[in-house]
Image 1 (tube, helix red, strand yellow):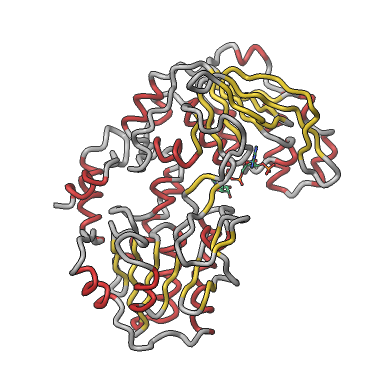
Image 2 (cartoon, protein in one colour):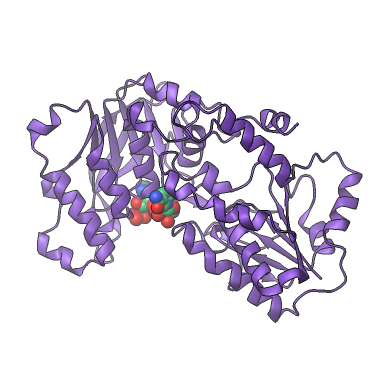
Length: 435
Ligand code: NAP
């Protein structure tokens, strides 16, 4: 019997469990450990609440979770309740699927002012992540600046712009729905330090901005390259840029009906955030591209008055003490998934925060290949029985998958009309709901 511990119950964690099952069949016992009492990581807390079709992949993970070989060990924090060294003593293979839940730091003056949020916090707030439920974003101002030109920046701009009825069918948490309903937002500026050909936005997500009830995107015609240059782009990018061209062609008469403008400010790099005890303005430097398509400041600056800033400039995997780490790339140091024999990583913890949910799938098979190269495990370690014995002497309150199903039932039961669930947003509430 191979004893495998997977740390993290998001997509990478469950795809890895699936790959281990496929490879070892009944000859593997797999524990999926999560610091939260609820599974699915990015699916629950990262994917936008109005993208339910993407979230539906959790049904596939549930199939894996309900098999004999797989066990969910929720509410157990690796590093606090149990160490990596202890897990490596107990299991033949320990696989880090911890994702990249921390923000890449916005390294400009004023980035710590109240009213500046990283996307992990803001996305976590509207998705009901217990760590960010209480951040109370100041939505009483007319202008929000969103930094970054990736899909997360798009998610944030869209969520800030939707009407209450557009959230129908979503699982946006009640506190966010109410706060957004009372928001005074009239303008969302998306700051991109490079140009339309350098966006990291996918067409489906970008296209959605053009179909919002009360918001309308604005792209300056002058920022767009010659149309012929789009031919050099790969097809997905070309489609995205075509949407930008459509946005640039929206007539002013159409804008008159819309009360929120989503302004794409290209070639614009934030250089400071200022305000008296809170965000009041962003100082932006105009940029141009150098021969390697990097953004270079031109020295020309301007000011955007605003009351909130959301920085969507990418994520990092938090380091774990004793585990080799690549600081530059914000992920564990690894060779195709192997950190060292017995310790592996998958998903964003291995590759960094790029790609879609499905991009994580091959990582599971890759980790199993590394385990096999290292001897395949089965070394007589105690696995889950050993973990249970260790935790018996500690103050751990484990949440099982059966407990999660009770939590889920309670969340479904208290959902507002048309919504799949009303999430619990505090750990104590989650734990209480399993009783
Ligand atoms: P991302 O795709 O890496 O985009 C980060 C953006 O931030 C880029 O535009 C980047 O510009 C910009 N940036 C980085 N550092 C900056 C700085 N110091 N100042 C100004 N701008 C800066 O990251 P993400 O949006 O967080 O998305 C993470 C991953 O999740 C991506 O693979 C994304 O596609 C995926 N995702 C997918 C969906 C979906 O499919 N619906 C939804 C959300 C997220 P440069 O290009 O100039 O570096």
